[in-house]
Picture 1 (cartoon, rainbow, N blue to C red):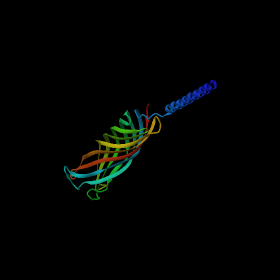
Picture 2: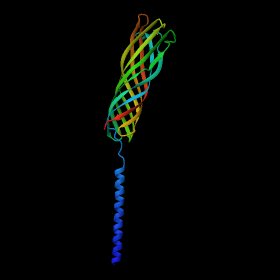
Picture 3: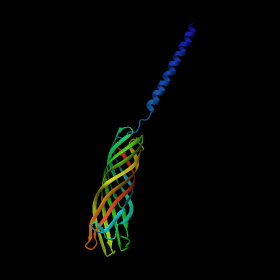
Picture 4: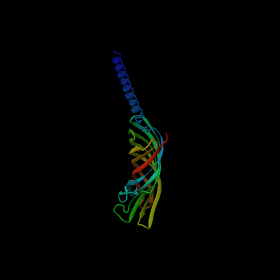
Length: 234
């Protein structure tokens, strides 16, 4: 009888030990499970990429083109800095605000107007900045987002009439609407990288050309693809 009780006691102790071991292992697994990445917080970073101005230009009196609009396009390098703040309000949704500023040498040009080779024109982007909202969905360390806001940019415009005899140029700072989308990936708790596309429309810039040809008009928009990095303050 005592022998049977001893065996039953040993079995009971073994069962308790097994249960305790499993509970400890489960607790260790739960404790070791990584937390989902939190996108909330302020960040600062840099960008570099390609900027492509495009649009059309013409000359003539108001409301009447002298030769007809001429399309132009081109591109160049752009690079700058950005600063922003994200709120991860309810997984996976992330909202944020961001401002940026950068330099550029991108130029859109055409060596003719209305098919006439004696005329040419261009618009060159010197700098651009924007203030935008960002709305996205986070999948742990990956963030897909859209962005929209207001953009300000400076352009140098010129038109050559019978070059190199006469050249009319002017500079203007333009305000427009900017929209875009991007993908960002967190490499670590503090660092992330991203790729982003943006489209901005700056409307039409107008300047007096000459008493003969009237106004010089440039309708301009830009498209850009930029790669960037960010450091998030925790």
